Image (cartoon, rainbow, N blue to C red; front, top):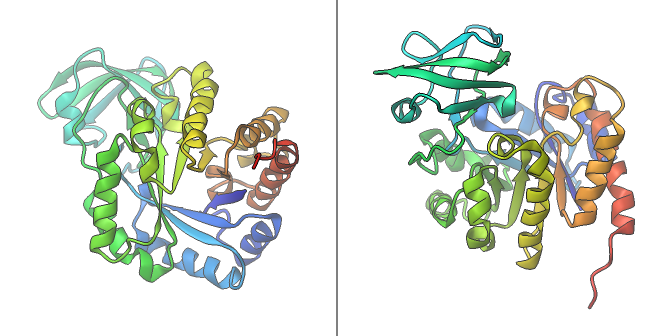
Length: 328
């Protein structure tokens, strides 16, 4: 069983990194959705120094073919019923998305923190009515349930990151929003072309399209990541446990390990103790056969990164003891 944490300002301290490693964390993720790989080099150097001689991976999570909000001058408060303008005169987003939007299209921002519906469109912009209010921040993801877009597997920034990865001590690459075998083939080709072909490949499944095609590409990844955040933008929340179990079964039947992420210890972003439900969630994920678990915002921006790491490992241990042993 392996335990990963996400690097961020909350844990960017040698003492905290050391505490997390002692708690059982054996890998750190660098999230490139909101910045350049070069910006994270000081943090990565810190991890390598503190973890010297210990089992510790460094993973980069690429931008991938997802859609994101552009840079905002300040977080944008969007109460229910307000109008959100995308494109010209409003919040920047991909032209591919703008060109595909039609009235009635639902848009989900930041894993469901804000939900809006397109009311009207004009060249270069779309006017949306907020259905679920919240605060929108720079770089947050946008999901358009049911809308098919021909997005590239990798961005230019991703290619630059892959070229630097091995030189910076990266051991694995996470590709978000994997939809098909083509996405993983494209990633492998790009990695080999820049001399990073021996790095581990993690395929993050976080869309309904990815779920539907999982059996077709599961064998191309070293590990599958079941990412429940954006997935919940396309699937009702009450069905997430079913889909998680079904995806886990596909991985197990093909002999491919899988990781579970998103809100494992969300309450510990602000509180020193987890909820009973979070403990049960971790226990059940491990009992179902997960090979690894990952914390995201809990360690990147949370108030208690070291404590979250400790609770993650402690919650998983009883499940590892109780999990049926494989028969020979």
